[in-house]
Length: 266
Picture (tube, one colour):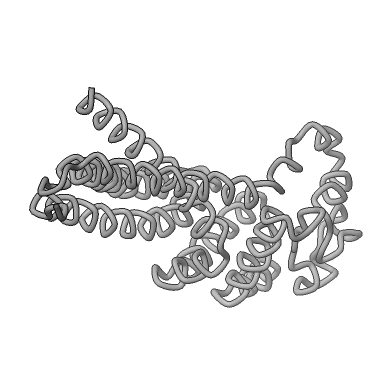
């Protein structure tokens, strides 16, 4: 009966830990602007994105028979600094909304940096900063009301609740596993819980690292502009998450092994 209880507690520990890890990754990494900024800065994402955007833009304009002088004026605006400004402002606006700090998603378009004579007619009346619904309406996208954008505004709150509930369950299960150890016995089952959680975390991280390498290469090599941009933006973020998970997995694994040699006082 005691062994069955310990096995069940270990299962609850591992499940709760994994749920908490996912919620924590969302809350403290993916919903944190500084995390994205540091990841992009570390992996030269802004420079790569500017170069890819310039190449794609030049190809599209040339294909449509655009004026070479006009093309140069526009492509000269696609610098790493301007790209960084565009990405960071839109990312910050979205994360502010996702964390419940703004009622709507504000979209920033660097219209003010483009010469008025070169602006397409459909962009002439567009402001540099507009709410997403207003921008979609300007482009006659009437289906925006069916988009579940408001659900995204609760991401920060939901991830916080889930993380702290999962953390509370892990602490509670840890207490019960320690309580079930007799005086003079080792914390074997608690060690098993940490080893399983650490191993699972590390192996998922390894799978993520392999996927990141394949995904980045595959997307960047495609002709689609969206795929190329995704191939530049996604790998740095995945890389930073994978690094944290690998370190955490190894720490949990080693700590779990150590618990096999720790005895409860009589």
